[in-house]
Image (tube, rainbow, N blue to C red):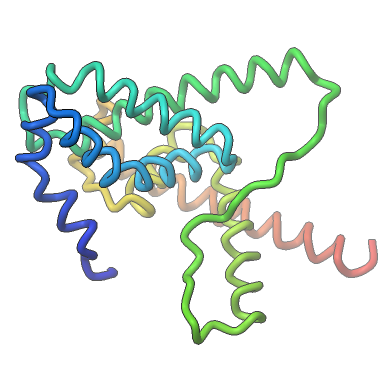
Length: 207
């Protein structure tokens, strides 16, 4: 597990900022956005594997946050509460995207996307960077193929580092159900990745 960054520490100790934002302090609200926007965008990006959809969901999340923040009763619940808002907008955006795809069946163009969270170090060579990019792309494409229930839990637990209790609170299910969905999510993800690898190798080597 990676050690906490200064940003992580700031996010986990932002009670005063939240209270100030609740009271109408615009600077405090902007600070909340600066602390959490990248985290929520990355969550949405892994949910969709699409930059435009992730941006739309993230922006709508913080518009929703601005409107409903005064109603938050327990400051310590801010993190799962924010993710719940984000998850609801992701689900909504996905439903809209599915509707659009049904209306425009003939449009098979695939948009370019940005792979997030690839390590950026001076000592990383081009071959290693290429391999990391390929692996990231394979994993994200495979996560996208999971059903909604498994995809949500896997992203929140493995990429966002949320606790089982927090995920249960966000989705509105028991912790045991969260653990079950995570188990089956990993099992299915492994199968999907293996199929994707076999397919890519067959394409790259002569078919």
